[in-house]
Image (cartoon, rainbow, N blue to C red; front, side, top):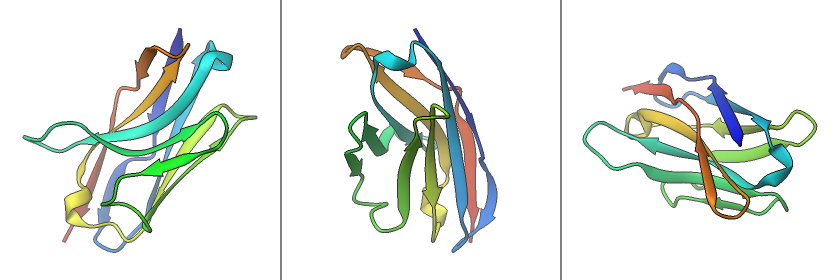
Length: 116
């Protein structure tokens, strides 16, 4: 199994930046990909960004050019650098890991609030 713990959320003004961190533990060598999803009130959870074990990244169109996902394999940690934040980025952000090609692990979520 894989366990995920997020940190780094908070309140920021529009145009500001935040960095989220997600530390993985457990069967880390079985992880195929990690990423971030978010869920705003009254909306479905949506993909924000992913990074595979090989380093390939994918981003939602709404965050391209503003968010950057990266991973530090030595620390078993994935980061989401969020710049030029907008009020519509306000949501609970969840870390996700796909492992053994078919299992999913989720973090507890961290709140990001962007004020206008």
